[in-house]
Amino acid sequence: MSPRLPLLLLTLATVLASLRSSRSTCDFPQDNAGGTARNIRGLFVFGSSLVDNGNNNDLVTLAKANYTPYGIDFPWVSRGGGEVGGDEEVVNGVDYASGGSGILDDTGLVAGRVTSLNQQIWNFETVTLPELENRVGCKSAELLANYVFVVGTGGNDYTLNYFLLGSNHNVSLQLFTANLTASLSRQLERLYGLGGRKFVLMSVYPIGCTPMAMARKGSGSGSGCAEYLNRAAQMFNTGIRSATDELNGKLPGAGFVVVNTYKIVRDIIARPHSMGFNNTDSPCCEVKPVSEGGDGALCVRGGKTCEDRGVYVYFDGSHPTEAVNVHMATKAFVSGRPAEVYPFNVSRLSQL
Ligand SMILES: *[C@@H]1O[C@H](CO)[C@@H](O)[C@H](O)[C@H]1NC(C)=O
Ligand SMILES: *[C@@H]1O[C@H](CO)[C@@H](O)[C@H](O)[C@H]1NC(C)=O
Ligand SMILES: *[C@@H]1O[C@H](CO)[C@@H](O)[C@H](O)[C@H]1NC(C)=O
Ligand SMILES: *[C@@H]1O[C@H](CO)[C@@H](O)[C@H](O)[C@H]1NC(C)=O
Image (tube, rainbow, N blue to C red; front, side, top):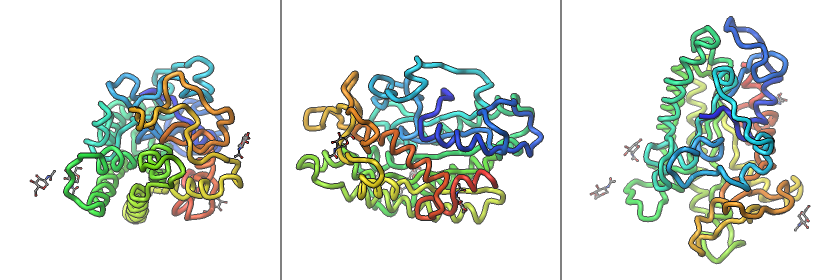
């Protein structure tokens, strides 16, 4: 549970840091998250590898990225780590995300140990919350309105659970998806019950268009996206959009927004050049293909990377580059289009 945050979140945190107010009576340290004070003090982040900052490093799992070339453009890594600890950092937020994990407790177990979303929320509740209340001197009900809760999960419930080869699932995709979104709603309500008020949900990406999914589909790269995965993602995304409406309607004082990363990434893939990209289908780093006994997903240890990382959509076989993350974070914060961030943007959410 290191408080270091991956890029998408750093970008969000930077913009949010400029928007804080001191409405509450909680005694926040002067300098937390830096910047001029408005009402956002930090981020709590839950989810999968898309938002994991290294929490799997000590777990027995294949889902790790604690080796080069991962982190090649991450300023704190290139400066040599900069491990930070202690209660001062807790006030800036904590990232609980775990690569390979999903909404369901059994998702990702195929890769080894992961920290499920339920366990992540439990860690927040039992470890961070008491420490934070103690540090800031007020109760969670007052405290947590000053934080944004980012939840980015769901894709692995399909790729590392439902669609797993040999997995003996008896339920239809519809029923499975309804179960997933209902579980996620309950988990979000639990965070609301603890005092969370501002929530940013990430939709599931076009998981059928990753280099790994396209390679697994067969006939080599350039064979197009695996549409069965994209259909599942879209079904899930429709579900969380309805869940968002429902939660916004029934939970007083709360704001839930969904960032439509599905659309944002597909828009890049459809018209890459207009957004500064020129490679949409191959990993920037060296990946060992499934056809050669590799996983097709993660960078090879110490492997080479493409020269111009800023023009690639995917860094490895299944995760987008920093350039794509910056693009998504910016859309999340400023976009006025409900098709991109629904029902309103994170800038507005932060001012609730
Ligand atoms: C799937 O269905 C079969 C036959 O109806 C049943 O025996 C089995 O327990 C079911 N498996 C699960 C995981 O529900
Ligand atoms: C729904 O998910 C729960 C676990 O969260 C599981 O026990 C149950 O079997 C699932 N039902 C369906 C229809 O998938
Ligand atoms: C992509 O961009 C790189 C660097 O800007 C350039 O060298 C390369 O020729 C471009 N490739 C295509 C297909 O446009
Ligand atoms: C966010 O959305 C609002 C409308 O809800 C819009 O007025 C505003 O320009 C958008 N961008 C920012 C940075 O607030």
